[in-house]
Length: 491
Image 1 (spheres, one colour):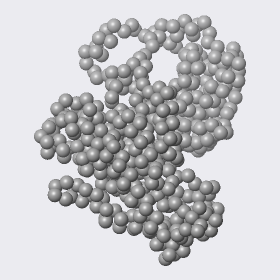
Image 2: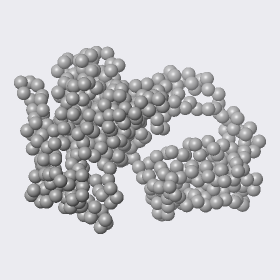
Image 3: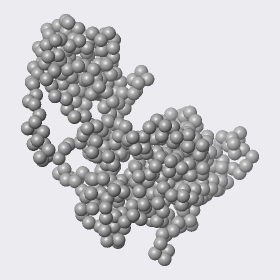
Image 4: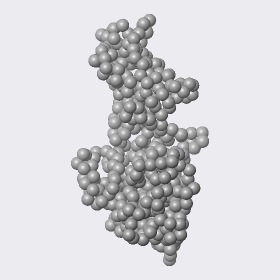
């Protein structure tokens, strides 16, 4: 979304770490404009070189990319820079600072592109473009604000122009040990101001932000604001400040609290439109499925065990000798998945088989296990619609498209096929015998994820599922999934 392109054009982005564009003068940080100028000049030349050095997959991309030579120089480490400058993110001073910096980068990038045009020639499609009649330019566009999900982890800085997402993370290390990591600038201030303690750092890792923690000075809380401390209006205004001096568009997440309304979202959209943003990404807290949190073991658990009625065991009915069904082919991120749904002689769903086109492997084993459990649940009288509801929208890193529909994972594909089978059979597949109804009645409903998380408002954990590499929690930021533990990202 941050890089609008013509057909067959390619993305060529790079970002400057603004936290490194400062200098210390009389004990205070300030912008080093000379260093930023030199960095922009080098970055524009570097990105232009990338176009000539790249090998593109097809001829059309090669021609279009070299005809317009678009590059997108952006920034990262913006939130870190503001902290060093002692400027709160959601302040008028921050807006003015962001505009000054991006105006400087945009103008300098244009001058650098003009200098390259004198040296190497303008981009081939210059004649007839909006620039025709003015100074020659080497690149049709020069600036973009990209997400920098991977870059910022490598550089050890805040991503893009986003505020800090949290002041503390729990990093999983070897032998399942957990290491509490605190933002280095916050830890430095805490030690210098004398309020640093292990207990406070632990509490910070549990809450993620400093706003509700006692013992932290108010001016520090004001400076170290996190994404969820900032109102959507300030998020939009910050994006607009950068957009005014960016050739392409700006990647930025507009964070909303869990209780945000449709009207709140509408206000953000309209404000972004009035302010001249080219695109906007909104994200409401906990709007995606989240992992159910485990309750600490202790007295609460013992009490629950003492009062909960003993569950009734359900024995699945025997599989019939003859079944009838359909086989569906679904394209998934793991390959072609063939799903067979069978019913017994009374029209009740009784089993599901799945087979991946790629033989063997972990994905095939997981598919077989899931299908066996689905079949067991069907023959135990579980409502098929409930099974579909559990399978649908389960997400894995490999997303595919099948007949215009997004297939988020193999379980999602199984749920989709099962749902289509139920609809296509006029509800006959959803018949449950009286025997199975009676067996199902004594079961005890488990608490929902909402129940489990009702007492953790303000804890912004697992907003986008689990990391496929290390199983830590993913953060949804700037249109990308980012793992703060191992560095995995997917946009």
